[in-house]
Image (cartoon, rainbow, N blue to C red; front, side, top):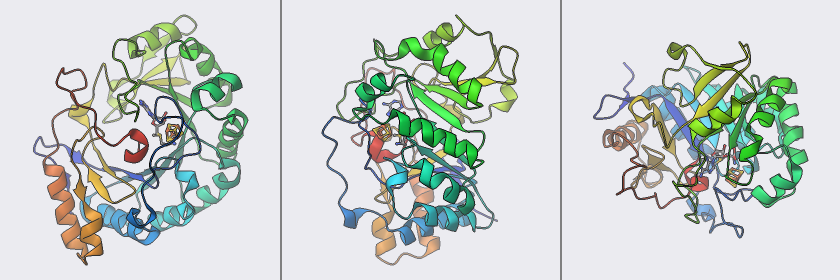
Length: 332
Ligand code: SAM
Ligand code: SF4
């Protein structure tokens, strides 16, 4: 029998998020400072072979059924297509998805699809190229929109769009973003802004809450909560829009946490297991791997890393401390 990644509260992790790089070609204000960050040194990054080996351990020995590649920006990782193709050859074959800012997808969507990528989430927070340039500090709106079209064209459907709303910047755009996505057949999901930016600029008092997002959408659309049995451990609360079939999701990580149903585990680009996005400690698989640990030993260490998972992230708790790694280095 395949072992499982189970924690002391009985939650089983079957969804692995793999960060392939901490680097990025955008500088979203809710994620990174304008000058970027001190990137992980090359020798500390897992090689393509090391990533493939750890993904194999997770899928073949530890019951992981879904692998999502992320970053930083995963499309800047040269070996991405090969890593996806090696993941798709595993047995049992996991679901394979990607979270990306979309820049470069016009070139990569078709090869990724061919390599075995099943689904993609592309982040787009605004319909205004000017607002995009202010929010991401790069003038690349057209590239992202072209990337989304390329993903749909390549059959990476349903294409999902992730949006983070920032007060006074793009929070007035919620209904327009939804109309735009519905017209194109993209599934939009709003994500509440979380305290994961390197600059520590997050403020609980001013963040745009799920409740506000829903209120804003309801000024133009009728939203009916989707059948809750469809949600499972998915972080998004889903709503049927104007009777369906279009849907919209809201990920209320801060105001309505879903930690009790969490089935995630994360692997950073430098080979550290994180049992929670907000974990304040990590388990080093890279050193074990480079010191000659066999697959059984790596699996055992991975299981031990999961056992200590806390019951929740406690963002709303006065004693909450932001993790020292920013989102871009954890893998969102
Ligand atoms: N670069 C890719 C992208 O932007 O999609 C993948 C990595 S990014 C860290 C993954 C997701 O996290 C994106 O949808 C992004 O909008 C979201 N994100 C980044 N910082 C966030 C924050 N502070 N709060 C909530 N979501 C955030
Ligand atoms: Fe880059 Fe994604 Fe962070 Fe934006 S959210 S800076 S695209 S890693």
